[in-house]
Image (tube, rainbow, N blue to C red):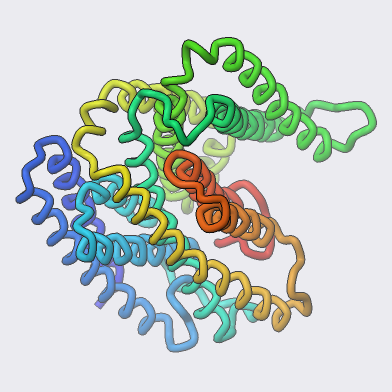
Length: 417
């Protein structure tokens, strides 16, 4: 029996579960939350069957996460499994309203990818594939659930200034976040210009070095400018800084999800049609795509700001959210560490070097350092609450870029087909 049938059924279950979790959050009716969890469990079981069938169809030597389609479905699978564990253990049904939509969008994105089982290249024909990828994705799953928890925490945080966090600390974080978005926008603009065969020439620099200089320059200018503006207006905005950060955080991740869906649709429609493929790589389409994503970003910011207080009132206690977020990260971090180590051993077997500073290796290390900083700050510096929440958000954004961004925007040994 075809594994895709089970994946499609799981996709439907995740959609219904996500919808019911959202209705549960809006209405507060416990029965909706229980039904949503039950449907998520059914979807997880069906997903398990699909995973096993795909493994059997690919053969014993083909672990079912060797291409982008397989890795996305596996990522969704372990994320749902980890969320259900936390829900059963700690009764965290409100988290489902944040995690299950991500699972639904993830399976939707996977359905837009090529599902064919391809023979593994020689470098991937190793038992280390199973260990390396499985360990990393268990860690990623825990961090994805952590993101749902920390988003709820930031939404729940009172408007008044949190005594744990100085106004200057919040200003730096908000300016850093917006500057990072600005740098990403600069990267997209430069990509559009390169597609149109137009490049900005900076004296004494190669085109690639010039692009990097522009991206870094955009980040510095926006960060310094916003820091100066926020510092001048600190007395007027200090009570709203955490609110601004949480709204931007949600909006950015929602926009990223839609970006992946648009990319998936473009890839799906481009199959077998060279003319369509050329259109989806044309400057015109890239401009349209950028405008659509900008509209989604603005709309999600408006909706997040509009419903923030009503939603915050229905979320779990701040202390509970903070503690379970710590549990999720403390669970995922050793798996990420073991995944990086096993990957280094595998790389030495395949390519003769433990570390080559491949883009995905580099960003995996950055992700590791962010979560290591979170645990260090929690253990040694006694950080809790909003301070560690900021670090957890940056950690998950790093996970997204490590997994999707590197594959779609950069090239290297770890790029999926």
